[in-house]
Image 1 (cartoon, rainbow, N blue to C red):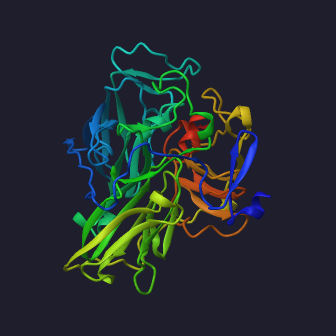
Image 2 (cartoon, helix red, strand yellow):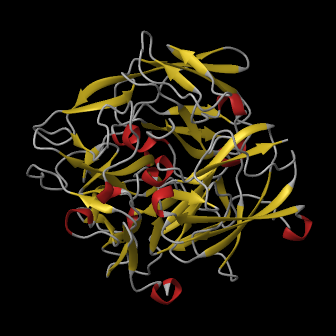
Length: 504
């Protein structure tokens, strides 16, 4: 039944009932704002500031404080946020491949916190395991008691990132067990960009024409505060969301870099857009309106793990939570004075548009998109030493599970050997964006056929549709230790759709 309905409907479970939504694409429930929403395209696109590190011969050192603050997100209203350095999104960190980056995170929030560098090839101790907490000074609230390997740091924690990896668009966000969704919703997310010689040798757009775009959806209360259906608004005791929202929380306001439906004035030239879906549960199908003559407006050059082997031209891209797409848009294909809207074909009403570009002026442009971008090793499944299968399913009272079991930090669900090549197969009942820590992977197949149009390159998150089966291949290089994989629908993750793998 699920397979028969694919492409025509979405299945959404409410308790033991299943309802069919005519619009395909979302697993989640819409949470509506309680105040009049502003007109779109009135707010300039903010660009998150780039932090300047302290440096020595081998290492960049950063200090970041997580704290409560207020920010004007909707014009005329202030919103209480939790932010890295008190901003949403947090400041951008920029690193060099192979150069060590060390970040000391101070926690001035009223709750414990964890930081995960999403897409980072990171030692286990710095990966942001869900129970490796930064506990605020003077904190007297509850702490995990069911994980004897939990690591508690008081006041601050040092995260060390060797960054032995390719150039890529990474991001960092909170990863505390049971409360990730609510913490990210309140603002704990930021970009971390990695550069290398291979990427910089290419004539791609750079400087002010290299733009990070963090897309999120949010709902607002009547006083301008973020609205979120947490079971426990203190985020201290009882995890999860109210029963109507267990499938995922969808907001009715689209934010880009923390601004509602913003506008960016651009030159009539090529721009690199680093698009990140940092929403809790919402998927997007992004298109430009109007399409330029000849189509292929979005030229994909990169994915989660960096450059593709060759560019791919799309009229639209579909991205699930946590996925990143680096695309080049040539605005010289439009007339000066024209306005171009980035639309969301998986949305309706206030969620059908994302932002707008205004073609402001003619300009010189020496950038191009080469026919070849990078050499990528193709992993051979015939050389894999193990094949593992993981079913992502709703188990009713057990919550969202992997292979029928909720997350237990004391249990290892897989134990790959260091440097082993393995094939992992995933099956899903609803939309589940599956994310692996530590490693990047290649997509082998979907439903026994070729990978999809957005599966190229190195990935760390794969978007699974209802009733779908997909196979990936990866090599567990880098570091031994305990890591997690999970659904990146954050409400699913918080309600136990996570598992451990231990590299031995």
